[in-house]
Length: 97
Image: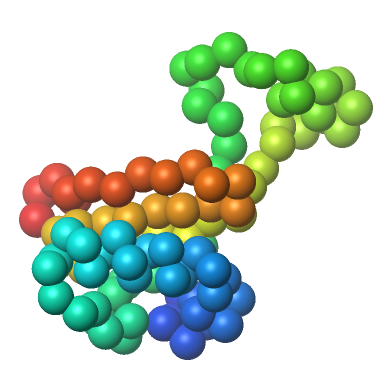
């Protein structure tokens, strides 16, 4: 994961940043200032504990690499939201906060 400033997150991943902010607004029940969010860029891979689907197998055979999607994660006040280019969605509460 690569740390990003709010300006970098919004500039490089505007559609993902909007989704992260919307999810955090829903959890916080207040308007969220993007500067108060801790942003990280990440690469999403298939779950290593699950069998690869046909498309992933083809990618491994043709390129030698697992498929990867670019994602953006934002955390604030013990909550996080994470979205990637392919639409995978996760949100929840950070443990230990």
